[in-house]
Structure formats: structure tokens, C-alpha cells
Image (cartoon, rainbow over all chains, first blue to last red; front, side):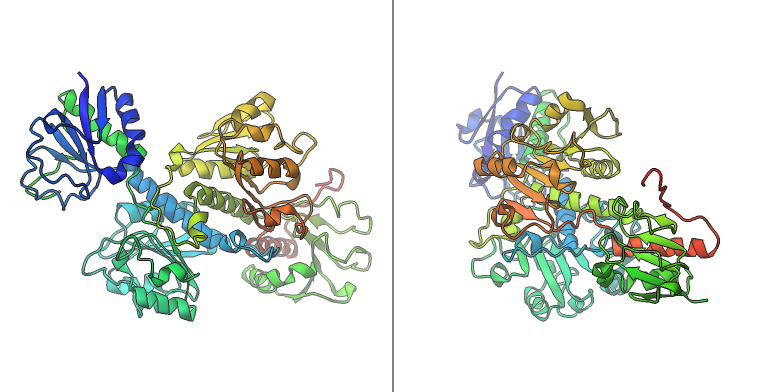
Length: 309
Length: 309
């Protein structure tokens, strides 16, 4: 029997158009992936909260709703959604984050920009220091922060990891709590912010804390826009206390056209790509769940409606 | 007794001015590091082949000549040099090379340049593929090539290593010989050249072999300038067969002002910094050798004049 899989996340279709049918075929599932269908014909819905589809009532033969997002807070309360709901747990997300953080850390460590943008054709053979001389501080030791900090330590960087509550990670110098934060930031040359957004972490990089890193330090923020006080960062860039900021997340996304981050040569904007779900690996997770359901096996990453995740 | 160490490599003095006295102090050696001295007062000479000092005869109390270069082919035949000669074996060299190669691989893998240079302020949230989808080929599996290939494999890149003679390295897909070269290059998205310069490796990337990688592939050359046929590379960039080249080494260095590599936007020139001896770690090697000699211990990395290295 050929299944009908409704892909109900139109803006993501270009990314999944090839990968999802391919992943289904690789999983041995015979299915048509469509972007529109008569509701009663639909066997599975692949979903993103930004989709126009909000009333699940007509999809009475739908066997599961498979979210492309890790967070389901915008859908879990939808009372028309009675089908099993699965969230996305994408192994590619951690890998992608590690690649972004290690890549931009090495970019700033090596001073690549002055070679990439070198209109005067200057041959200036000054070697950067070795990674073992470079102090990197990672704020946040969740799954992503820990993976990034360990990958940096494996490349010999002198890594300090900071978490709000006490944690210990092999290979890292770990600090925690308010007092630990000051020590973690003091003298850091590259600071990576990978904390969740909570009242305790909002504006954790502010006018005061931004005075602590080494003069000319680099900020990498692939975490949450709200972790940084934007005005304080711009002021610290103006004085040279902070030398550069490479930011992947912002309070408003897309970053508004008139935001000063766009025009400041000491800021690099990447468009929220560090931690995005990757179509290649996410398509495999979706395909595997459809295969399991068809085979009578338990769905992966099934959401507990009472707990909300 | 305070030793006199003549630093006879004037162009490198700015890099060693701080590091060498510090390394000597840390090794417990009491010494004055000077850039000029009466020859008979000199206990040790720190040397680079580019130095004006060519006649070692007057340095009759000199206990050893310590080269800052790994290669001593330009000094080993100097008949006035009767003192023990040591070459530089810098642990920082491999580390620095790994950092350059991993950094520029991630830069091209992540497509960083379009964010670093983004005058139109384009918010274009297309994720790069994961490293595990990216095919990287490393030509050369000596100490440097092997270290780089293994570091890339640790970040999940799909790494193929090629060597002229048969080699096997854990974690890598290894190929060798002429037939293996074709297979190693076919479909590669990033090609790293880390071969020595020999008649067999000169122009190994030429008009023919440059047709083998995936269309739009990136070339990284931190090895030797002569490994690449410059004209063939420029032609392959013109057709789009090669998408970008990041080059650290050139047939003539510094790269002449009128060389087309400077003006081609698809070429990044780095000024022979990938594999340079690092002052911090090299200073420690020099200091350790002086300490050993003073303590009556054997010198490290002593050159065998008959063999020439």
C-alpha cells in the first residue's frame, strides 16, 4: 500500500523535497510525499508550528503528526490535535552546532578575516598563537555546550566551561554559579554563549560582564539572542573592549534591515543556521518513525501531552 | 655564569624578542640574548639561513648553532660551520598546520565567506550539509597530512587520504599510487595538498587532475607552491570546475604583487603561516637545547653532516 505523507510546512519544502522521499525509500517505506491532499487520504503529517494547518479535525485517518521542530510548545495545546505527536530529535543538530562553533572559533583564532578581505594585497606573515595559548570560555554546559567545549579542547584550546549549577566535564576547566561566571569570563579571548533563554540568563553578557574578557575578545553567540544586551555589545565594540562578534541568533529574526549589527564591520551575522534542524538527518528521523508505525513498533520521541514535551 | 646567546636572524627578532628570554628563564638558563656581540663572546648562535651571518670562523667559543628552520640544506654545506648544528623540530608546527587546515576546511564547508562579506545584508537561512556528508581528500600522509586528516575525521568529515606509496591510517579511507590518486580526487569537495615537493609531486594538481573533483570543489594548499600548476588552477576557477582556492604557499614568496591570485575573488592568499615555526614553542626548543648543553647532556635534533639532515 502506498502511504500519503502530507508535508505541512510549506516554507521548509525546498529543503525536504529531495531528502524526505529519499529517506523514506531508504527506510523501505512506499509513500507519496505531497504538499496538499484531501484530509481523509492523509496517513502522516510532517509539521512545523509556522504552518497554516491549525485544525487537525478533518485528518481522521492520520496515524501521527511528526514535528520538524524540537520544541512543541506552540502545538501541544492545540485541542484539535488528537493524533500521536512526535517531536524532532535530530542528531544533526549537535553536529551542526559543533561545526559552527569550532569553525568560527578557528576563524577568529587564526585571524582569517584579514586574509579573506585583503584589498591591499598585504603579505604579512605573522603567525597566530597556537590553540593551546588561546583561552576560550563556553557559557552553558548542556548537550550542545558540552559537545562544543569538548571539540574545542580536542583541538588544544584552553577551554573553560561555565554552567549555572555545578557540573564537571572531563577535559574542561569547569566553573559555576555567579562567582564562577566572573572567573570564567576574566581574560577569555573567545566567549561562546550556549545557554537556554531563562530570566537568569537574559542579558548575561551586559555592560558590566563585557568588561571582563581580554581586551579585543571575540563573542560567538549561537545560543539565544536574548543572552546579549545588544546596546552594551555595540558600545563594547566601539571602545575596542570587544574586538568582534559573530552572532547567529537575534531578538528579532530575520534581523531587521536597519539593525546596526548589519553595518558594523566588527559584527558577522549568520542567519540562524548554527542550530537548525538539518533536512538530511531530520528526514531520516521522520522516515524511521513512519517505518516504525507501519511495522507496529513504538514511535520515537512521542510527546507526553500532560508534561508538554 | 651568564651565557651570551647571539640571535642571528634579524627578521625574526620581533617574534622572539619576548619569547626566547622567557623560555630561557623558564629552563633555568641565565643568559643574555643579543642581536650583536663580539664573536669570541658568543656561547650559542640562534640561526636562520636568511641571516647575513655566513662566516662562522670568528665564533671560536660558540658551543652550538641552533637553527630556527627544520630544513638545514642551505647551511649544512657551509665549511666555516664547524660547531655542532641542530635543526628545529617544533611541536607547534604540526599543531599550527592542523589548526589552519581544519579552520579553512570548516570555513569552506560552512560557506562562511558569504556571511563575512555580505554587503547586501542578505538573510538567507540555508544550512550547510553536515561534515559527515562532505567529502574531503588529503593528498599526502606524512606527519602533517596524517594529523590533519585525523583531525578532520574526528569532526565527522568523510576523509580520504592518499599517499604515493601504500599506507594505512586508522579512521581514514586510504588510497595510494597513480590509480589511487584518480579515485581519491574523483568527487572530492575539498582537496588538501600536503605533499613534499619532489619531481613526482610537482604539478600534481594540473589541467587533467583538476577535472576530477566535484564541480565547485575547494583546493587548500598549505604544502608546497609547486604542487599546483598555477595556470591550470586559474583556468579551472574560470570555468567554475574549482570554486575556490585557499593557498598558503607559492612558487615565489612573498607572492608577487602582480600575480593574478591576489586579484581573483575565488582565491584566498594566506602568507605562508600554516606551517611556520611558532616562536612560542620554538623558543622552548632552543632553550631546552642550551640547557642540555650547559648541563653536559646530549643536544636534541643534532644534524648529521654526512647525511645532510
